Length: 119
Image (cartoon, rainbow, N blue to C red; front, top):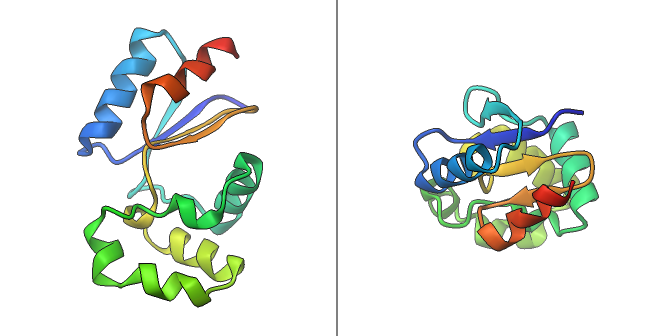
């Protein structure tokens, strides 16, 4: 699988991450999280592979997250329902996402992204 970089092009953090990938000559396929929102199946695969709780993949600073009061709703949701909700709207997903065969990263913290170089 080729590296996948999932972003919202207007997001400044996504832009920083993209610059970092380019500066470090890391190849990737660019995907717009709004035009091509990850499917429930993709999210399930990536989140399982990441070893993180599915709830960690919500964009908690997004307006939609707050408008829909997801913080409260998510407490009573099954994992399946969480995947469905995430897949329903790209703006609910924490971004950027970097997906490779061995690494799943969400958000952009340069020190975490350094792991990509060792691939």
